[in-house]
Amino acid sequence: MRSAVGTGILAICALLVPLDVRAEPFEVPVTIATSGTFHCIEWGPCFSGNRTNQITFDTPAGTATVTFTGLTTTYLATNEEQRRVALGHFTVTMTPGFTFPVNLANPELSIFQFRLRESGREVIRWEFGPGGGTTLFQQVGDYNFDVAPDADPSPWAGVAFESKPPTLAANATTELQADISLVPEPTTIVLIGTGLVGSAIARRRRGKARAEDRAAG
View: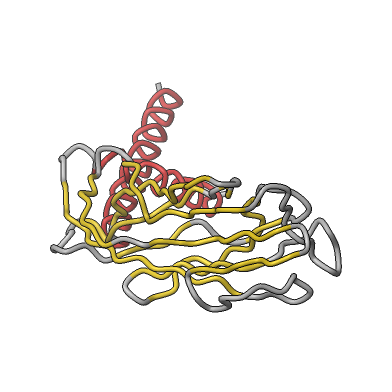
């Protein structure tokens, strides 16, 4: 029973940490430099430009080009709120009547992979599909990654990026976006958690003492 109570209290601590630390406004700059490349996948349709930032599908129905353009910029991350920022953008151009070819194994599967890098480090690996139409969706992959800020973020560990899966539409430019926020240091979580656990133990002892006094009276 005591073990279960302790585990529950620690879980609550982890949830309450951002609220506690948010009492003191804090802001740090974070500079990002993004780039991206497209990659062939098994049973995916053939295209030119494999492992580059621009690929071209050439079919009897026409052609389509998908390009990713990264950026280098500095944002301010704060502990008070999440902020929506840009990571780059996708541009899709296609001729009239073109539709993306399908995955040869299953038309519902993805047709190519995209890898996002930040300062040369791969942070996202997505697959887009399905083919058969003029729009592609992000179907497989993770969303979150972290970046070290430009200044000492203490008492925060760093900056978390929560990316938003894009939809690639015909003859349109789509911005790749993410919400950024500061992440508490593990030591901060432990200290706050220890304080809450101590308070809980003290409350239990006081409650037990009052119960014993009532029983004695």
